[in-house]
Length: 583
Image 1 (cartoon, one colour):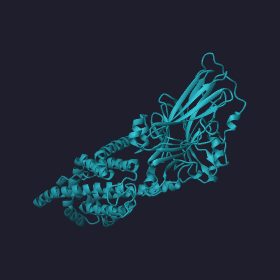
Image 2 (cartoon, helix red, strand yellow; image 1 turned 90 degrees about the horizontal axis):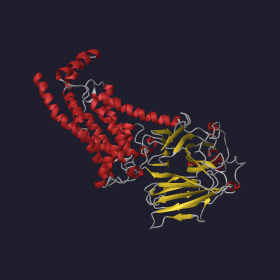
Image 3 (cartoon, helix red, strand yellow; image 1 turned 120 degrees about the vertical axis):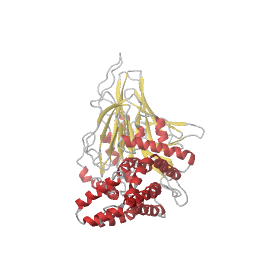
Image 4 (cartoon, helix red, strand yellow; image 1 turned 45 degrees about the horizontal axis):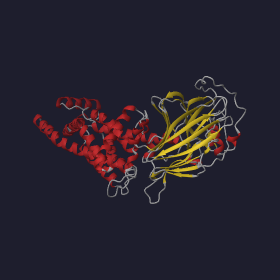
């Protein structure tokens, strides 16, 4: 096999794949409001009302839901005549701002309306504000909601019903405290009340949301809690140099297996989801950050997707319904869940001990590549634990990977070296047979056989190593730990481009030197011209890549160049001597 031709084909396939991904993003751009006006909301009705009014359509129906059997001695009430007066009176319930060392939230009882990540500035510019995940801005609308539905009585939704239990507008975690709680209360007309408590802990991005149902009435109360995430799909700037456009953006869930649905295509193209599971969770991922509702491990829930229509577009919704409760008169029941809103920190996600939550760090949708990525990140973190610098840790990781794959790459470069020394003889064969490609190929294969050159010797090692380096690429793209991390000198942000384009230029030089050492037997003039442009093509393409990724490519390419030079010197000379002796 022509080794250079293999490299050329792979390189152009890579470029073609990136271009195809960009074309797909443009093709799947969000539809206009005219195109989406015919879509249906969860209740099956369209809406063109203002934003807050449209959110009413995201309240699920209690129809068809089942709850545990009524306790012995309790009675079942008749269905309510209408919505309770207290709910109508609380449309403009006061909000509470709660601040810890890592989060600042705005709550209205049923929803988390705003969430700022205080330890993650939007940029490294002085005075840059924190990253805002949840927002009420119609263009960037993104909230976490939770409420109740009941077929046997009144119930609070995420829109109305809950009011602050204490008359405070701001709550702050005390310097000597480890947690802070913010309670809300709903009082029903039939003696049923629900006390909701948000508990935030120091240094933690998982918020406990606990609902305690108390029935002081004369009839049993049945209800289901629902928790959901609603987002206006973000308009991400597409481009081969924008890592955010390659990071997964969409809804994910765990129902015993990791599932996901992208935003940049028809959100309901594969149909609505209606999956019953126990111990599952739902989430929305973006580059470096995510949100997720995590119920108790033994809670039975139903996971669903939908795309409610609002004025100006369609939003993406993912919901979990359940568990159901049946509270007899004089009895109480409770249910709780965690709401994660924050960065994809692997150590904290692992400490949460939630099955499948580690897949929120989305190295790949394929389990084997995700597992490989997790292993590589573990090594990267281990190196950082005593090096203390993510840039040098990237270099150390590439060195370790190169050492682990040395036997394969040695076989690859040994094959390259032997083929390089026989290029003059192959050129003679090409001159002898002229345009007769068939005879030329036959003569070249006979030469390979006679000199014991394996044309696949350089190809197969590349194919085996490729998954490792692809997984390493996604580790560097996905890891929030590298966000805005400095290396040294002019590189002060590994997730930003090289400000002086030094690393891309070095990468071009390394590729050019590697090309000079790589054999090209039987290559026609057109292919040779294309190969000459490859260092320039990749140099320009990587000029705006995050510097951490370019550092990875430069380190990997430099080590490969040194190894290839050494193998060419060692095995190429012996092959040349052997050829001279045979002559």
